[in-house]
Amino acid sequence: MLFTATWDSVSQHNLPQWYDDAKFGMFVHWGLYSVPAWSPTGYSAMQVVTGKAPATYHDIPDGAFYFNNLNIPDSQTRAYHDKTYGANFAYDEFVPMFNAAIETWDPDAMADFLHDCGARYVVLTTKHHEGFLMWHARTQNPFKQNYMATRDLLGELSNAVRARGMKMGAYYSGGFDWTFNATPIRELSDVLRAMPQSPEYVAYVLAHLHDLIERYEPAVLWNDIGMPAQLNLPQLFADYYNAVPDGVVDDRYAQYTLGDLTNVLTSPPFARLLSQIMDKEFGGGAPPSTVKHFDFSTPEYTTYHTTVAKKWEATRGIGHSFGYNRNETPDDYMTIPQLVQFVADVVSKNGNVLLNVGPQADGTIPQIEQERVRGLGAWLKQNGEAIYNTRPWTRAEGTAQENGKTLDVRFTRNGENLYAIVFASDTPREIRLQDVQANQVQNVSLIGSDAPLTWNAQDADVIVALPPLSEINRNASTFALKLTMNG
Image (cartoon, rainbow, N blue to C red; front, top):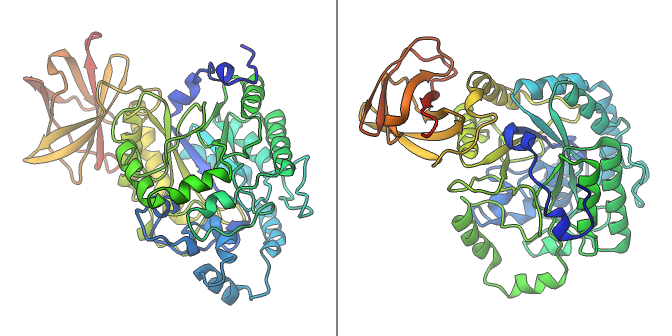
């Protein structure tokens, strides 16, 4: 269908099957901030915003916020910068350093890594809050000449990603651009003060987004923070869907004005209020969207408590930061079992996962990130039939009993197969899957094993005797329960 510039029209856009089937994508946060690659650690930025961590707005704990933190005189980032580069070293001096580093970047190597990790789609930061451009945009920054990568990083990675059968998406920071408005974020209300609203910025954003749509046809148009209040959002969505009918947009296009600041400042302490909303709706992540149309919502560093009918996508870094942070230690990163369980939990509740890696300036994925995500990829390679192309079952969560211990279970469904993903911390010998409509079960198999299983039904439960588990499946074993088709 041809979409027109009205909310009624663009709201008729249906979620494409590829996105619902994909389940797992990789986010790539890469930009000038990848040169210094430093921030305080211990928390994510979203945990700070929602009051789940100390209000360290002087040092937002994300490497991608280096520019913001640098402009706050008493920040740890300022102290680190002055010691490492010198007090007179300007942020823009990272540009030639970045462009020198990317000369050796191999897009095929990055695409191979993302594919091997099990990703079905990839989203690259084309312009983060710092305003630096990762493609050869037709419209350049009016305040900074040649403020872009010397290589078309978006174009080269898009070609490599698509050659491997993955979809390619584009992240764009519409809500912040510190080249247009460099107001430092010292407290939560500064978020609105820092959002540029000028007609010049509206035109700049529109020129960029149409450039991305026309030249790269991104399968995901992933905006961040918001959009200028005067931008014609229905027109943008109509233009995108007409050019890329099976494309998707996230929920971060909300259009705030400075008038909204009054509501923030006169509300109860905003971080506490936001935290209460998050605890009710999610497990403590992104706020409910105020935009009138989106294809999926984006809770950050959290998941929903239960299955949600409207498609959603959980996004987070492997550590606390989206941009690479050399200050993080291995203990700051999720373990392989934690990653596996995170993916299984999200998918069981009708979500996708967009897991971030933060390359170094030259595009190299840090070894600790590679190790953790490759471990997830190995599990997905063996257990992927319980993740990809699945849909939620009648419930997402369940339990299993093993030698007196209660184990968490997540369920997915594909046709006649009900998948039970059991989280364990050791090697169980017998598992009792509880309340799985045992009278509907025709057969039980263990994904990744050719050994026949001994199983029996007792009331609503299924009891399974296990063969030895592989190292990959030791912490998350997947059982395929073949059901009668009315099960």
